[in-house]
Image: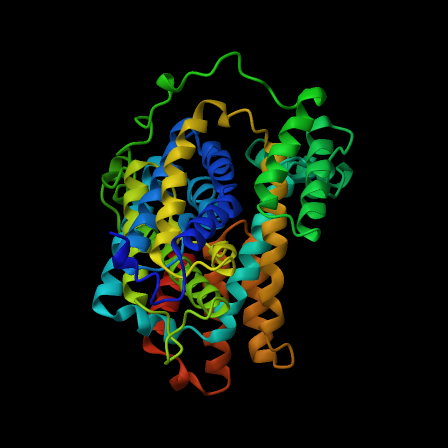
Length: 466
């Protein structure tokens, strides 16, 4: 069994691979608490999503280890879960069941693109500076979500929003009067004396200290420490008993609603519905594809795992593992699964083969036993993770050439429109549209890849007609 991993020929050992797998799991294990806390806001069952997160991560990571023989771990992606909750469900009004259907279809599309080789054409079509802008854009979005979830800031909670929502019952003069008298803040600082907010601030400082001191698995230790501190503060609620028999996957298992995606109320099938779904699926696929590629190449480079051509060995197999995990994850009840940058922690520890991934997969399965007590982790303990991950993702900004306007304008527009519109899809769409328009202005439209032109036309149709 172990011979298939080619451990000795790759210059590793079983002990090293096991330690690397444990390190990778501990470094990314925060997702088993954070992912349910995000998806549960859509109405999904927290414990069911917790189990689905563990199973999807285990399956994806196991496929990566056994099929691709690479030391990468997978789990529901940060940013992609935010996209699912705040754009697809809250923003576009889909049910979470329809959201799972979108994730499933995006996974199937990812599989098709990988098998047919179209994946490479899409990657080549998007300018490198826009690829680099996606990561910090998602980072800002995630940080905003973390700050808002914990009440450190209030987004869209000011009186002006209430007035706008009542506009049908107010005439123009009444609206002008009320808006003029209302405080102008739409995004404002929360009440720091609130125990939930205060615990979040404490948790963030604890996490910062652990990371600066380079404590291994600092994120999960931060969650544990913050949860414990929340007990005397009255924020963390301790359950009366531990009973895993009552925990079930059934609330989310095979609950995806594909048929409901393509109907519009009593009107039934509608072209506008199809176009909207298509845009969201494409956005999911692009983000997942770019995120996975960036992670695979970046972490493999750190561990000297690239081949003589500078490519990741078994790249197609790795991408197939990612896409397969996404489709399975949607079936059992979680958002898109992707390869984790935290895999780099295990690679730095010496992990070079798929055995590292297999060990991490086994630990994800064992984590299911935590399901009955996972609910005690308060939002104040998971929000610091969102904020910190968002801040760390801003690192990619330095790769953007700020001396060229034709690069800065679409790249920065993509970055800022993700948090400002509360939508990853809008950010990507507007960045791509602006890039094509600039090339049109410069008379350089022939340099734009036809695939990119098709994508932009789809985005424009959505904004103009839907």
